[in-house]
Length: 189
Image (cartoon, rainbow, N blue to C red; front, side, top):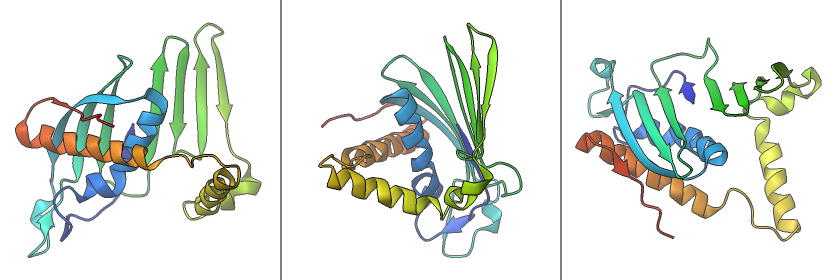
């Protein structure tokens, strides 16, 4: 997973603001596709820290995070606020024994290679739904899904436990960076 865009170099919210503000979404998506994260190892940098505002924390704006999943899969998260919004900000790739899928900018399209068939399929959203696919446009879809779950008597997804587990992963990433080692993720219920 790669999620990179422009972002602040400093904030009063602490040096890990980028990780909490933006990369929790990346971690949620990775968990949805690959399952539970059992261990992490992180590298971080703040190449623009000299631009930090006086009295604010310089943010760790670039990160490379290795993740190990419960199902023996591995993944990496490349995260940056040292980029801009000119190039695609998100790229998600999954490579497995049945093929590979690449999703660009979550909503702009996907490419799927089926290993056995040697077929490449591409999916693109309709231009007539573009208003629903903008960042702000997705909120109505999410609220609608939440209400539909409640009306149907289902627990809304994701759950509060999902959010808690992502925060546990963030905690492990921070400890990995500060302690310069792999950290096992707390998965207690």
